[in-house]
Figure: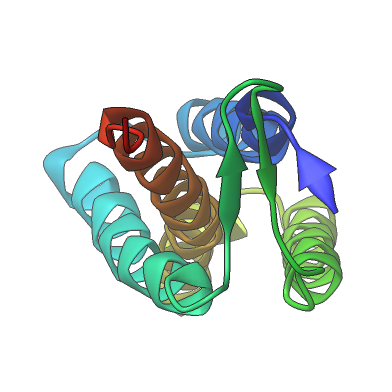
Length: 140
C-alpha cells in the first residue's frame, strides 16, 4: 500500500496522547513513575524499529508517500494495546487506587510506555527512511 507520513503518524500521536493523559490522571508524577514509563517506551522504541527496519519500502517523493508491503503487526499491536488498557481500566474500576501500588501500577506504566514506544519506533523508522530518500540525488 501507499501511505503518507501524516497518516502513519496518527496512531503514534493518539496513543502517546492517551498514554500521557492516563499517566497524569492515574499516577503521581514522580521520578519513579516517569522512569518506569520511559523505560517501557525505550524498550518499545527498539522493538518498533526492529519490526519495520527490514521492510522493503519505496519512497515516492513526488506524491509524498511511502510504498510498503502490508504491516502484519499493526492490527495485533492495536488490539493488544486496547486489551491491556481495558484490563487495567477494569482493575482500576473494581479497586480504585490499585494502580497506584504494587505490581499492577508498575505493569501498567511499563506496558503503556512499551506500546507507545513500539508505535513511535515504527513511525520513526518510516520517517527516517523517507527523509533519507529525499537526500539522494537522482542520476543526471
